[in-house]
Each structure stands twice: as structure tokens, then as C-alpha cells.
Length: 205
Image (cartoon, rainbow, N blue to C red; front, top):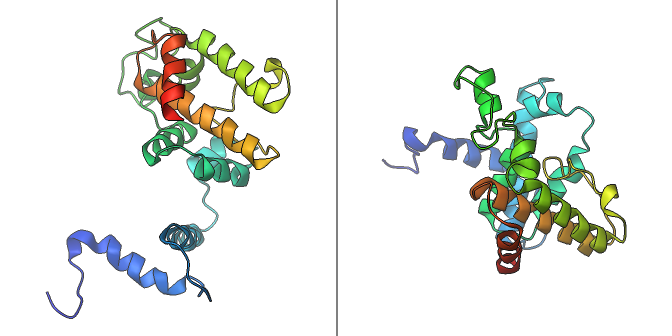
């Protein structure tokens, strides 16, 4: 291999290299994180343009979502990247629940193996096992952060974090707690106790 040729096995690098030329020039030094975000934004915009008016699957499933606020919340959440990836999969409804697998004929039933309710993402996060107790405790803590009441905290926020909260610190605290809730409920047994969840929150600070 000579002359800077990129092997076919990693051809995606060729595309990134080619399209990085379209990233708008910046007149002062930027961090690697900022540069990656600008590159991602440019490539994403170009790919959407190539796709024409074709909508993303999740946009069709959630047509009234404020996607700008949602993606900002996901991007700015102060948690490790692996937790953001987990939340991203929840938001995009690509967790292999029995409900989803049954719809594409990869599971014989849509029932949860723990409680026999339909095994949806919402069920795994909010209801199964100790989910309702953990959900209520989380809503009470969020209500304290936001100076409101638990009934004003929407149940859909974990799977659709499209809120805009001021000041920004409260927004980040809300996102941190919801991301940790997702991580806990997606990666521990449904029987995980409220006290276990509180310990996970403490360790994630």
C-alpha cells in the first residue's frame, strides 16, 4: 500500500476523509471533542441529504418529538459514553425486547419472562420487578430538583428526554439521573432493589 491508499476493509475511513473537506473551516484552535462533533454534524447532514425526504424509523414512531432538545440532552449528559450508548438504544427503540422480537417473528411470545406482562422498553424501565418503586422514587427526586411535584414528571422522559429545563445545571442533573436509571434497569435484574439503585446513583456521581 502506498501513496496514502486506504484498504478496502476500512473504506469507511475513505468516506470520512473525503467528507471532512466539507467541514466548515474554523479560524481558531478547537478541542478534539468539538472537531469530532463538527465532523459528525457535517457527515450526518450530508447522509440525510443523500437519503432525500426519507424519515428515520424513530421519527415516524415519535412524530411530535422535539429532536433538537432530545439530542442535546443526550449529548450533554454527564455520564460515560457507554451509558449514553445504552440510552441511545432505548430512545431508538432498538433494545431486543420480547415484544419487538415477537413482532419480527424471532420470539414465540411478547411476554416478559419475569411477570408475563408485554415485554416493552417502558415495561422494563418503569414497571417490571421493583420498577414501579424505583420509578416513583426517581420522580420524587426529580421533583425536588425541579421544584415541582412528582405527578408533573412525565413517565416518557426516560425513553424520550425532550425536556428543556432552566437553568442548565438542573437540565444536566435531570439527564444524569435518567441516564443512570436507564443503565440500572437495562443492566441489572428486575429484582434489583431501590437501595441497590440508590447505591448505583451514588457511585455514578
